[in-house]
Image (cartoon, rainbow, N blue to C red):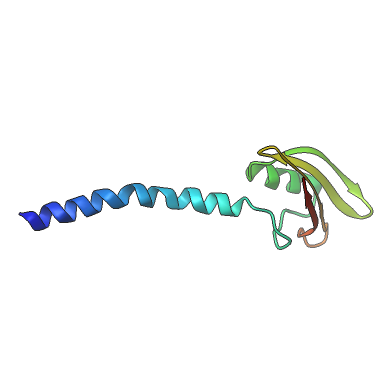
Length: 94
């Protein structure tokens, strides 16, 4: 009888921990790095950033690159994306 109670207690204790795994994966996926591919058009880049939880303040083409100003959690940033590859070329945050 004790074996079943111990197994049940361990099972119930792991459920909350397992519930955190998708949240951690989503938070990590929302981080921008030079390897992040956002898209090859202004619309695709804006949509990708919005899906990641960023608020896009301004986006335009500048010197053949997609330039985007964004805000997330009181952090402001600017990035440039290659329209050929969709990858981030430059990333600056304040």
